[in-house]
Amino acid sequence: MSKADLALELEEVRAELARVSAILPDRIAIDPDDVERGLAGLVLGVVELLRQVLERQAVRRMERGTLSDEEIERVGLALMRLEQKVRELAGHFGLDEEDLRIRLGAA
Amino acid sequence: MRAIVRSADADRSASPDLVVVRTDQVAALASACAAAPEASESELRTHDAITLRIHSASPSLPSRFGQLFSDEDALARALKEREESLRKGLDSVGARVELSATLRWRDRRSSGASAPASGTEYLESRAAREHERQRAEQVVARFIEQLPCERAFARHRSCPRDGVAAIVALLVTRDEVETMRTHIQSFGERSSEVTATVHGPLPPYSFAS
Image (cartoon, rainbow over all chains, first blue to last red; front, side, top):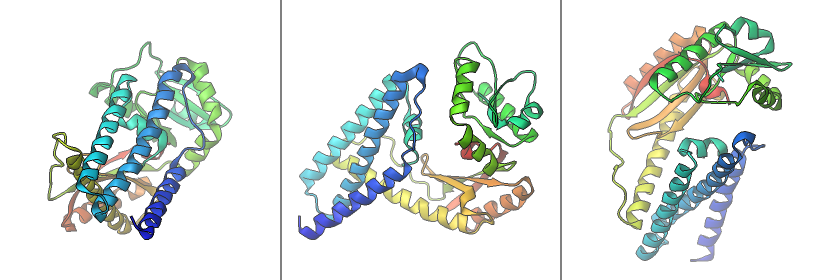
């Protein structure tokens, strides 16, 4: 990867993180009567948000042609499995996609 | 919980089937229940009818269905903690109502319900989804631009489900409802990309948080 490509990707990640930090709530609401579920929702929400940031970055790189076929397959598989795991854990705590989204705003 | 109103409006909005929990500035209207209500159509319709009735009586912030508190003290604590932001929310929403516009793609293409079989397929499906989202954002921008309302009074979700470009919630005064409905329908008729369906007026669910 050239220096220019690297600088562009860093800039994109910075912009993505700035966008994420702008939608994070000032305060975190966790129901004292249901701390375990609240905490799970918060942690999984953060993991899902970061997964989405990585996914967008991977899509951009794929479309820009800076990933080999092997890399596309490997990165895609990792992101797909991570998504499956987040859903599985969310289901375990009785949380749906909406629950994860609401805690962190519209990503 | 059903809705939040200004403390001064609580008596006007209350009814025998509702419990009123107050702080200095705001009040919550709630229904007592022994167990969590089931998310059935009938329960959802009941909730909607109650929030609509409350909002007809006074400005309110309707609650999402299923917001539960163990008792009145727990509700009072939660209310106290968010009192200032709830009051500001009530001030900004006022007596306005929500109109919901569903923009559906005319060239309905299925995103493919089957799970991707490989990492490459997965990433390609995500790229297609991202393109659809960007296209939906452009449609929404054009849609809002032609409406006679401030951008601040519109919220949207792009690609919430298969075939739907966006659901746009608009906060309008009761006097503006019919004009806005006409504008929305007209956009749908003129657009080569989407159709537009209007729902409402509704309590301002999308502007209550």
